[in-house]
Length: 127
Image (cartoon, rainbow, N blue to C red; front, top):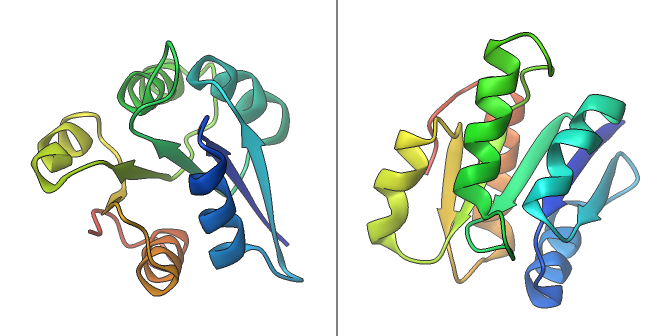
């Protein structure tokens, strides 16, 4: 069973991710705030974390940096991270935050599934 955690406050983004990835072997769990990601990762260690770039008061970049820092200090497990970006110009932010991959919105099921699968198979830095 593959567990995916998505952090987004957008119902439309969540619906697209869930429709693209959820099936009999993959569950998709949602948090609506970037600040909630660390607690979920600490408690359940998802196989993949998907972070929407713009989420409330702690966006995807800040959440990604937090996860990487805490993993580096041994306080959280190191988890693969896929960023959902608003525009192509945001790719540099995903690279700087050490995300394993990114997809630029608007999302499509094939691209999203391919990016998630590639990251889960251990191939970093997919776009």
